[in-house]
Length: 295
Length: 240
Image (cartoon, rainbow over the protein chains, first blue to last red):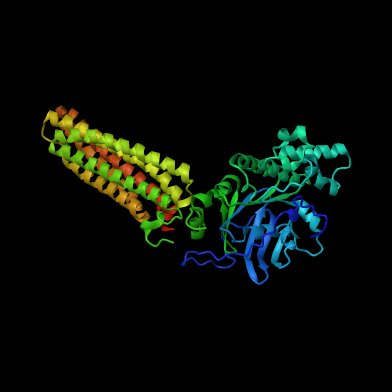
C-alpha cells in the first residue's frame, strides 16, 4: 500500500477486518472435499481466472484452494455464513489484503490473463481497474464534486476543467445521483443521507473507469429504498462492468446476480446460475444455508 | 441435517417458520383427505342410489372450497413473510398448484353426486356401474397414493402414479365402448348411458389431477419440472 491510495475507496478510513474464520456448527455428515466445487465455477471468457487460491492469516488458512472464473460483465454474488471467507476472497481480487501484514495469498490469480500478485504489478493501476465499494459509505470529508473528481484528478484522466466536469456528471448520472445533487455539488458529502453517500461512493469508484467493481456488502447499512436504488444501479452497471458483490442478504443475491457462489468455512462449496441456486441448489450445505437452516 | 424425510421442513433456525410450513403441509393433507372422502361417497351414492348422501356431498363441497382459499392465503403469507427458497419454495409453490387440483377433484365429486341424484330419480336398472366402481376404485387409490407420496416426499411412488394414469385412460376408453354398445342396443338407454359416461369422465379427470399432484411431488423432491414431458423423462429425473 502506498500513499497514493486511489482505490477511490480509501481503505484507510475503512476498518480492516481480519476475517479469521469462526468455526461454525455444520451438519455432521456433510464432508467438504477440499478444492471441490459443485456447479459451474468456470467460464469461457473469464475476466478473473483464479486457481487453487489459498489465503493465510498467520497460521490460519482462511481460504482453502478455491478455483473460480469470473466472467466478463457478469454480476457474481458471494454468499455464506459469517467468517466463511467471502470478504477475504473478494479482497484478493484487487490486493486489498496487502494492507494486512499477516495475510499471505497463494495460488494463481489472473486479471485478463495477467498475474494480479506479480511483484512488478502497479497496485495503484490495479485498483483503478478493480474499484471497490465498502459496507459503510465512506465519502471523503470534501464536497460532492471533489469526491468524484478525486480519482480522475490524481490519475490525470482529465486535462481541462470541462473534461473533469463531464466525468463528474456522467459518473453521478450512472450512479443515479445526478438529479438529486446537481444543484449542490459544492455541498459537503458527509451531509448526504446514507443511501446517497453510498451511491456517491459508487460514483467515485466508477469515475476512474474501472473494469471491475467489487462490492463488500454495499447495502447492509442502507434502508430498503436506498437498497433498491443501489440494486437498480448494479443492474445498469452490469452492462459495462464486471461486478462482484458480497452480500448477507440472500434475496439481494437472488435479485441482482447472474451467478451465486456459496462459501463455507473457507471452501467454495457451490457456484451456479443464481436461478438454480435459489430454486434447487445442488449441494446440501447451500440448501441448508439459503433456506435458513443454519448460518 | 434431518435424517427422517418427514423432518425436512422442520429444522429451520426460526421455529415459527417451521410451524408455518408444517401447518401448510398438514392443512393440505387434511384437504386431500376431505376430497378423497367426497369422491368415495359420490361413487357410493351413485351405486347405492343414495340421494341423501349425494346431497351431503354437494353441501360438503363448500367446505372444500373454503379450505382452498385458506391454504392459498397461508401460502401467500409465507411467501410475503419468509421469502422461502429452494425446497421450502418448491413446497409452497407446489402446494399452491396442487390445492387447485384438489379443489377440482372436489368439483368432480360434486358433479358425480349431481348425476347420482338424477340417475336415482330416473330409477332404472343400473348400466355401466361395474365400470364406474372399477375406475372409481382405481382413481381413488391413485389419489390416495399421490397424497401419500406428498406426505412422505416419495418421488418413486409419484412416478408410479404417473404411469398408472395411462391405465386409467385405457379403462375409460374401454368403459366408453361398453356404454356405446348399450346405447346401440336400445336407444332408450342413451340418456341414462350418457349420464354414466359423464360420471366416468369425471372419474377419469380425478385420475388426471392425481397425476398432476404426483408431478408436483417430483418437482418438490427433485427440483425438476416433469409436467408435459414423457414418462421416460420423469423416470430419468427420479432416477437421479
